[in-house]
Length: 559
Image (cartoon, rainbow, N blue to C red; front, side):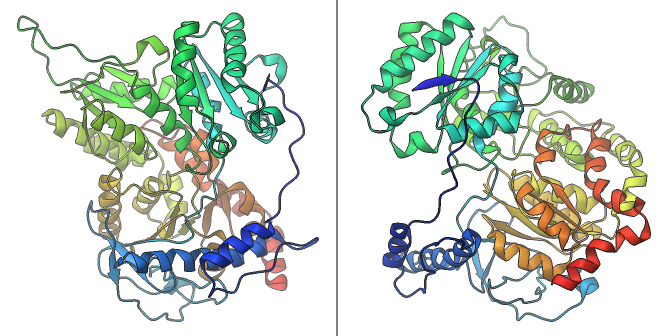
């Protein structure tokens, strides 16, 4: 195992093995599977065919368990309020509609081989379903890129292969001479074949880290490889921590179990167990104005300060943030402490704070957009027994500051392919801005943690007279592209892999990863949020007339 700050050439992209195809064929013998990938064959076509097989396997298992919910192939589910259970819905026959009529309907399930028009929902409930069961997102180890900057006295050690290191080097763009506070522990052949001792190798690397950097905490980031070879990182860490005298936090941010932004969730969940216990209040201690409040989620210090100022206007003092800028400043938690999340992808952290640390979670929409920020503050005030004041005016001021952007978005339609788990919050905000949300793809949906956000999305669509979007968990990208081709949205929020192909078909796109790194929380960053959303629309509008139709005409010729 070698520690590096620079990385080598990644391993060539693998193809689907014959064994994998046979394994699926054994699980679902009645499904016709594609042949093994051969030279020159598109791997996308193979995966598109296998998605049908995976769906059949899923349905077979569901029926064996006696479940009442169909997740695929012509059925849909509804999410009622904050309940996470799915209730079967009688499918509505597809209807043939034009682009304007499509904007007034929800989306029906589309077969991978057939193009069908969307079917109206019209019953006041969100359509909720799961397609593939696979994650098609950015790698979750990318959380290192913002967490190592947020926790200033930390050091992140990513335990993985050269491919992981290559990804980090390109995703973060940090050169070797910058000496960042993260490194790769590259697993070599000896590590994978168990010829080398994991404890001895990690001990050597951590000892060097302590001597060179002397961090207050070392965070081990597990990857897909450590999961596959069953490396006992949780068992090794306490022994090394006692020997070196440096706290070692283990977070398994692998792409097998987690989506893009859930990497931060695993790190914060591990740190939640390290937070000090809040001491019992002494009888002679002065009475507090309200119960202790801790906010969890990583934000730039400037944005965190802005949200604290908004809460102070309501007479609320924030007792701590997790993560904090210094590891030793982790907030005190325990019984009687109220906690609230800042992002919708922190469900694991919320569960850890509630179950293991006995905190009280404030279930609130997230402070993204003027409406979300107001609802977030109002939920905190309600939980702490404080009457909110001036929030309606503050929200209206934020909307007034982006009037020129709202004129661009009004009446437009948008489609979320799903990448960073911010999709529901963004959909709710853009629905309030006058857009029609056709579909919300999301890699993972914790309906309990996002219950307030889902309720606000439903309320917003009803108040704005917009159709409720269909929410698709772990969407099939191939099927989504077919639905986008059918619906022709004015804007698609997508991953980088699909942006150029969609642009070639005449669909305006915006990278979802930009919303992860841009400051979009709170009232003061509303302009930055709508600047991102409207940029593709403003860009195309400013082009000469012959350029505006060039791509679309090509798309029509090649369609």
